[in-house]
Length: 169
Image (tube, rainbow, N blue to C red):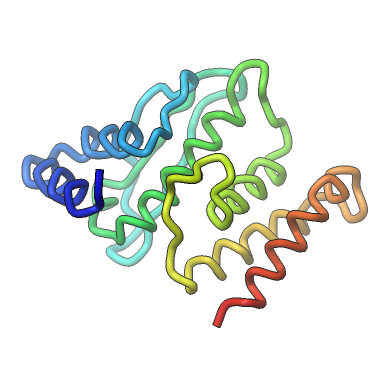
């Protein structure tokens, strides 16, 4: 399915105020689904120029992804990357696969937004957003204990993120 068709579907959902259905349509269309996903719910909108999505639920239990009602007012590539970020959290919090450390979960999710290894079907965002997400990944890397096993585990990915940030205009 091409982006023109996807946008037509999304606009039809928006016209009928079916935002949650539109989000379900996207995760289905881009193969982001997971058995630990409990569905979508609404969270408060931040502003017309910024959005926040969260995966909520206890570790090892099904996760609800909370989205703002204005999510589809943003660039589709950005929305897809934000959804992929949260759907990775859904996987990270699944029974038997729980990643306990929040800094590790966030580093992995921001890394995924840059390199799309888990979800290769997700398109890149603008260079501005790639720099932003790269810096967020590095911030969570720094929050891991200095010189810890966890930091050592992600040294190579950290270097990839730094190279990407430095290569962007």
